[in-house]
Amino acid sequence: MIISDAVVKVEAEVKERPKSRAWKSTISIEDVKEREDLTVYQYKYLVTYEDGKVGKISIEGELYGKDEPKEALELWKKEKKLPAKELERLLSIINYIGPAHATIVARVINFPPPIPVPTIRIPGAEAQQAATSQQPSPKKDVKSAKAEQEKEKSADKKQQKKSK
Image (cartoon, rainbow, N blue to C red; front, side):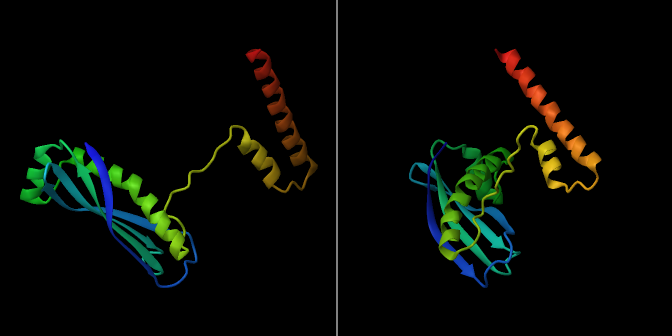
């Protein structure tokens, strides 16, 4: 079980100001060691902007595990590999904390934060968006958009009556 983490090294390189919000992140497990009664997973979280042409953020850190599977440490010592299940768990944890740490650095160097922004979807908004974003030239398009809005309104009213 991972009980804590620590950042041990941070680097940021700015070659030029980014022209886009394009970034890519890479996670790697650099080493696995025993320290006292803990298993220490050393990792690197790297963010490159525009394929590294304009800059990068590199964060090296450690995850501290207690009561970790001994097979993972043994496999690492022999082959520098981790069991798939353990690797998946560790990469998920690093993928959660890495962007948080890198966002702070990105703010300092005035780069876009390396956080994927989810798209918000509102039911029924697509029809409304289509009706408002298209520039209707014939009157038929305006009428069909209005008819669609009326259908949505009547469906909403029916839904409200059912919920009462």
